[in-house]
Structure formats: structure tokens, C-alpha cells
Amino acid sequence: MQNEQLVETQQSYYDYVVKLQDGCQQIANSLRAGEQSQAYQMIANLSEGIEWMITVEKYMFDNFFCINSRLKEVIEKLSDLNVALEANDFMEAANLFEKEIGPMFVSASEWTFERMKQ
Image (cartoon, rainbow, N blue to C red; front, side, top):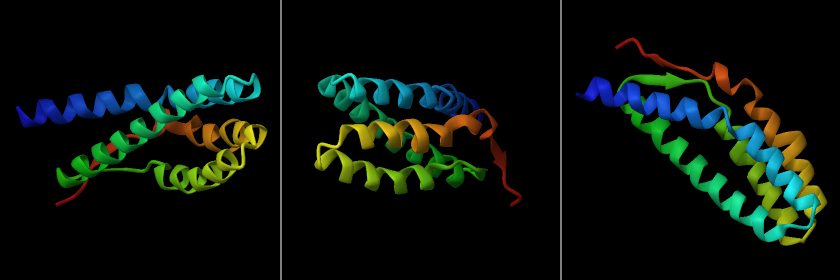
């Protein structure tokens, strides 16, 4: 049962992570179009998704799987994003999503869990 749960968790992670580059582009487009309400909702969803990914990575690590993701880099960029949003600099926020955060997910299809040697 646990092995099946691990496989399902990994698959859910893979299904989600490959959508993030497009999601970042949608956020950038909304910010540029002046659709801040929609953009903020998508940013909130992205934040929840990243939190979920961190939880999954920890769960998998606790079950002897590791993954070479770029989540730490993404999280570091989120502080730059917060600065831009607090200053209402929506063009800078859009650029961050389009040129810095989104591209980190280009290789997401290559992020795979591997069993660690025990």
C-alpha cells in the first residue's frame, strides 16, 4: 500500500510541476494586462502549489527518495517578487515570472525522484 502511495504521490508531483512554466507565463500576461485580481489569485495558487511540492519532496525524502528540483531557487526569487508587488511594480513582477521564475521549470520534466541508497 505504501509503495502504491509513493508512486501516486510522485505522479501527482510530475503532473503538476510540468504545468508551472505555462502558469508563470499566464501570471505575467495577467499582470501586463492590468488584471491584477486574476494575477493575485494565480499567484496564491502557485504559492500553495509550491508549498505542496515542498511537502511532497520532504515526504519522499523521508521515504528514501531524492529529487534534483530547483525549488530553492524559485523560493529565493519569490522574495524579489514580493518586493515588486509591494511597490505595485507589475511590469517588474511580470518580468520575474516570465524571465526568471518560469524558466526554472523548463527542465521540470527531468525532475525525477530517485531511490537513495540506504
